[in-house]
Length: 304
Length: 291
Image (cartoon, rainbow over all chains, first blue to last red; front, side, top):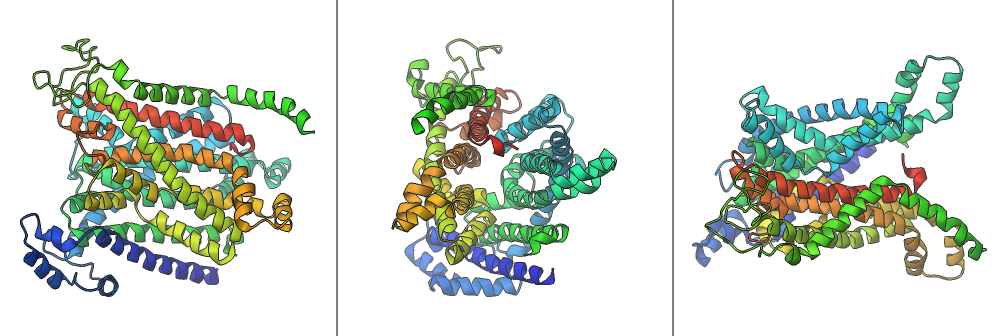
């Protein structure tokens, strides 16, 4: 187990390094940042001065190593727009988004797990069809449209929930529902198919034949095995959800990392964009790493 | 033998096709939307770019103040909503299909190479797939479109270069399963090159999987394009895009929420139908994999 953990940790670190490089290149390769900072009215001399001041005149790999060294010291860079350290703006926003993401993944699991288990236990029944409908609709529903439909229903037509902001817990209801519903279908489908596959195995048939009560077979034997692939997909969905927060936060005017990312892109605040892309990617890598460790703990066969 | 097998197999397969209600319904909706998009000039007499500032935000025909002149009403610039919706279908379909084709080429090549050669090749390509999955698609797409500048081509290219991961995963797994099959070994013994085996033995056998993934990716690309356009960094105005129409309708959410409901409904219907076709094809071609 320890050897497996260390090996996975090493590959996660290599991945993080590679992703940090891509995040750096992506934003810089696309255009000359100095010209963009100088703006439309900036002269060539302005651009040259900015280039020298921010080190844009150096080769890309020197700039990358400089940035990476800063990252390792906990320095995410300096925001062009706010003229403050990136971390001072980014960390509070990220905290808001992580809170929203945590609420949303709980909502997704609360919706998807019972439905998936029930659908897998009673396949091809009306209940199963209903679960499939919930999943299919969720996969086709653009999140910004669902968000606006909820605003129309609960804020415009009936003043039940606030349409924007984060002052009150009620502000989190609609964004949580939208983001959570976005993550639920994948979890539900996998729970269902895992349940069906597990219930067909010999050891379940044997335990039933031995007279163990059906409820206990389901809880103690089937569920544990059916749930293994769900751990991985749920953590991956959490990562996708953070990216989806870009859209949802902009609809509900939530001052989180997603909205900050969108606005920073519109403002050409490159250090902020780089740091945000990196943060989202690192959270995803960390989550999948944790999911692998949890899976190896649940199922020793995966430690190979 | 093969002459005998055809008439025996064909009716069974056809029955499976015709007995899948989701596949039929999904295909029907997709065909209708494609027809509407192609026949846009015939159905609507209006140009989707023509502004009529004297007839702005006219509601659809079934609401108070609506008329048959503009069946689905007009937008904030007095442009006919039905015309914009119909031409918007062209944009969605064009972007969905093109992006799915580009990503399909990239993902298939990577997946088959990784699955066939294994070893170091597999290691490198699997690493690329994981790295790609770690990057947030919407954020990267927004950042790139913002720097290069938005146009139809840029949106197609950016999405195409980003969403190849599922192709690569599916093709890699499929190739790994086929690699040790007898007919592959036979081809190798006969002296076929690796390229010939991948192109003429492996790829045709994975065509089913490829079509299923492609269908689902078309849906995903359409949703992504609408999200980018909604955030103002997708298809540039005045091109009619459903995501852009929802974004423009957002300012009128208080009194004219139909401006949001109508294009959203079109988007939802198209993506739902495409996903139903994809799911249905999977059920029909691989019934054992249904669960």
